[in-house]
Amino acid sequence: MSGAVIKVMSLDAGLLRRNPSGTVAAVREAAPDVIAVTGAPRYQRWRSKRAAIARRLGMVVATADRQGGMFVMTTLRVTVVDRSFALSSSSAGTSPAVVTAVVELQGQRWCVVVAAPGGAPDTPPSDVPAIVVGGVGGPGSIGVGRSVTVVSCGPVTIAGVAEPRPPMLAVVQR
Image 1 (cartoon, rainbow, N blue to C red):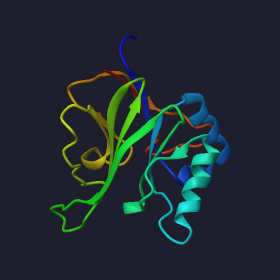
Image 2: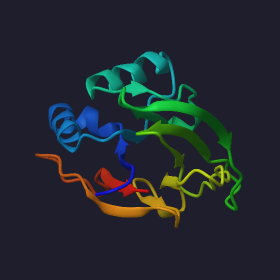
Image 3: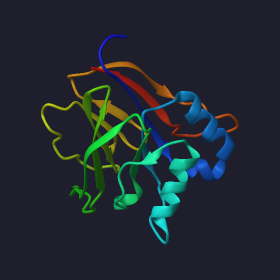
Image 4: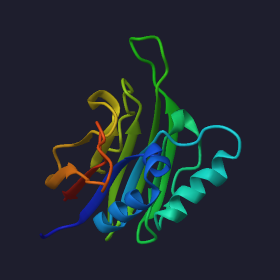
């Protein structure tokens, strides 16, 4: 593979409650640079609970707001350049949350967007390729802009767990 590469994973935080050891093993084996988490703790001590999730997976919290139970984690190799949180309007009358993090890895910037089902992400900076997790494609789905190549994308198998929506891992190249 030539060019800058980033590994982005989608993960439902509930998997850590249902199968902690299997989830940790699967995440460490996949070795993602960025994890977009849905179903994150939103109430009472939510910051410390999210930090505990990140520590358990060998990562750090990159976005600290609690919009819609979503956040982004990264490895220490990744630098968070910018982040934003928004409630986007939808035709259903609800206000799904959208969390955006612009990160830098190997000297290249990427925009990771985590959107609730039905959420419409803000327009990312035009010079930064966007990787959208969730949103219109539903929880766990990963979509990318035209300026990048998807090297691989598929579900992550967690031993002993049959998930209707397993975590997804995308390897994206610029």
